[in-house]
Image 1 (tube, rainbow, N blue to C red):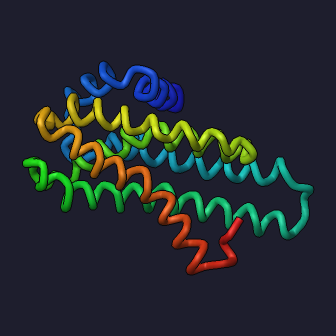
Image 2: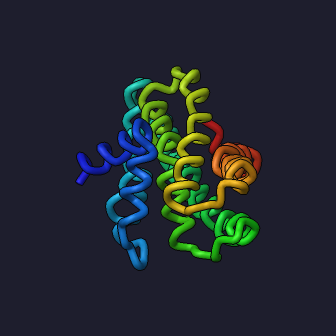
Length: 191
């Protein structure tokens, strides 16, 4: 299961065009397979790697357990919560503007697969938080989104640039804003 997950993540990042074409042919009536074999394992792996990353970087005491739990909860909220916020925003606000039906299931798949690089960077940074330069690679998500809009959503070519700007802004900014919101509303969650 995890091998297929990492192969899919790798293929979305390195070969987005053929991978989006394969994903567009898949039928998932209720997104159950998408959740079970892709989204939930990714969020779980990010949480697990965050857990291990904090444990490896600190000497063991009671305060480390508190920091571990805060980190895991924060990661689950950021990546799980931002997924739902992004897919809702795309389905309700962006899709109708670009002549697409308000398809919640398609928006969830598009959001999850487009965020593959964001998830991969989160996994690496969970173990090695000092690699802050990895955050620059997140802009490659725009290309993944562009190819997904063409292959997966079948957006008209005359609307593709506008769609990429709107959807890209939502997908890139939402995890950052959710992290900022958590830090503002719950200062104890600041890591």
